Image (cartoon, rainbow, N blue to C red; front, side, top):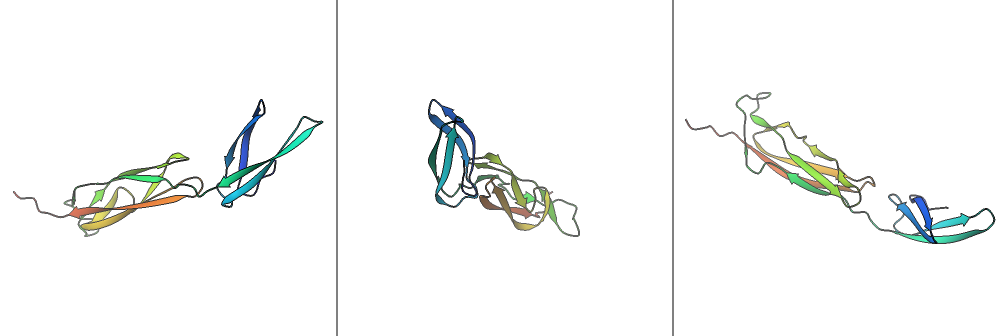
Length: 146
């Protein structure tokens, strides 16, 4: 078997003349790519071409569970700055890979100052398709009434 760069063919099975295989084409050229298959029983051989049409991959879809309400600043300041440590979560699901890890900037659990902070969420699949999403977290410093 020979395949263009970026195409991997594994698990080739011949079941009564029907050939199946797993094909991965993360880094292959977009469009039609020809994979040459060769079978042999030791005496006779045959060759066939398999055309693999490579299309752009689908990036992961990010779902965010961010604080919906403003977060109250903590009483104790950090580095002389009012704010709060804020946690948030998200997940990403890729059509081909299933659930994939996400990263946050700034990270979940970070100290966020009073005001509005934009958080960026990023997720990538094994082929390098990447998605980003953003949300804002508002930290308020309202004095509680007695």
